[in-house]
Length: 504
Ligand code: NAP
Image 1 (tube, rainbow, N blue to C red):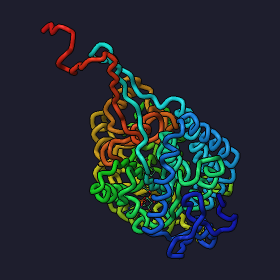
Image 2: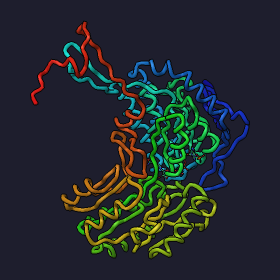
Image 3: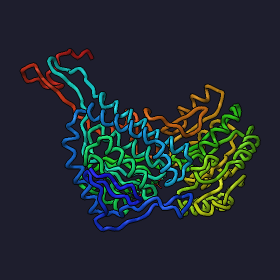
Image 4: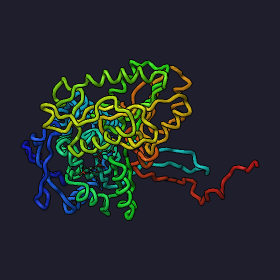
C-alpha cells in the first residue's frame, strides 16, 4: 500500500491505493482560525470515484467478513494503540482544520481510541442468543451476520470521533466501508485512514472518497451495492438521504440535530451548574449536537445565575485553538458566522440580549471565523432562538416557575438528544429521567460527556431510532439470522407437534 505523501496534497483511498479524483479536480480545506492557512488540497470526487470505491469495498468483503471476528479485533487493538501513539499529532491537525481548542481535540481523538478498544473487545463477544426450543431434541439460536458495504457520511464537528463511532462497529461486525468526510475537515479523516491502514486494516476494507454532498454523498446513498448508510449531520440532510436511499431499500442510521436544555432548579449548586453551562454551551464554540442551547432556570435563582453566567462569559478568551490561553475557538467558516449573526438578530427582537451577539473581528480574529459567546434571557419557549438549532456559541435562558411547565418546555422542541437537570432533590432527578424526552439524560452534569460504551442517539427529530457506540451499535451493523437444528431425526412441526398440555 502506498501512503498519501506527507505534503499538503491528499488523495482518495480506494482499494489500498491513494488516487486522485477521476476528473482530476481538487478543492482546499482552510483553517477557520486563519483563512490564509491552507490545510491541504483534496480530490473533488464524483460518482465515478464512488463506483470505484464501492467496487473495492465489495471485493474486500468476502475475505474480511470470513476472517474470525477475534482476528478482526486484534487488528482494531493495533489500530487503537497506533491512534494513541499519534494522539497529539491528530489533535493538532484537528485544531488547525476544524478550530476546536486543543484539549477538546485531544478528547475527540481519545473518543476514537476508546471506541477502537471497545469494538476490538467485541471481536470476542458479538453476542448472539441461544434459547430453548419448544421441541425436544432441537437447538435454537440467533447469530449476527455482517451485511456488506457500509456507506458512511460524517460531519465536521467531530472529525475523528464520529468516523470512529461508525467505522469501528461496522468493521468488527465484518462489513467493509466507503467513507465520505465533511468537506470542511477532510485532512483529519485522510490521516485517520492512513493510520488505520498502517494498523493492518486490509486494502479495500476502508475506502475514503472526498468531495461534496451532491457529487459524492448522493452517489454513495443511491449506489445499489451499498447496503447501509450511517449518517451524522443536519436533519434536512438526513431526510434527503432517507428519501434517496429508499428505492434501494437501504438500512439508514441518522444522527441529527439537537436543542438541548439544562434545567437549573432553585435548589441547585449554582457554582457547579455554572461550570457545566459554560462547558456545555460554549465548548466547541457551541457546535456540538449535544450543546446546551437552552437554559431553563427557576425564577427564584434566575437573576443571580444569569449575572454569574454573564461575568464568566465576559472573561472567555476567543482565539486560535492552538493557543493555550484560548477558551473558545472559531466557528467552522464564514457561512456559519452569517447564520449565527442572523439568529442573533432574530434574538434581539424576541428576547433580551445579555452579552455578545456579534461576529468577533478584533485584531487577529479578523483573519478567521469568530463569533462572540452570546446569551439571551427572557426567551419565550416558542421563540425561534429557543426552538431552532443555531449551532454556534449562543444560548437562551428561559425562566420558569414550576415543574410541570418545565417538563412541557423541555419537551416542546422537535429534537430529543440530550437533557440535563441540576438539583439536590432526588425525586426531581428521577422524574427528569422519566419525563424528559431524550436519548441522553444527565443529572448534575451538563448536556455533553457521553462515554463510548453506552448507546448514543436521540428521540424525535434527532434521528430515526438507531443508536451509535456501545453494544447497541452492533444492531445496526449486523443482520440477525435465526437458526434451528433439529436432531430428533423426525419431522417436528412447530406450534403443532408441541408436547406440553394446554392448561387454559
Ligand atoms: P451536514 O451539512 O448535514 O453535512 C454532514 C455530511 O453530509 C457532510 O459530509 C456533507 O458533505 C454531507 N452531505 C451534505 N448534503 C448531503 C446530501 N444531500 N446527501 C449526502 N450527503 C450530504 O451537517 P454538518 O454541518 O456537517 O454537521 C452539523 C450537524 O450535524 C448539526 O445539525 C449537528 O447537530 C449534527 N450532528 C449530530 C450529531 C448526533 O450524533 N446526533 C453529532 C454531530 C453533529 P459536505 O461537507 O461536502 O457538505
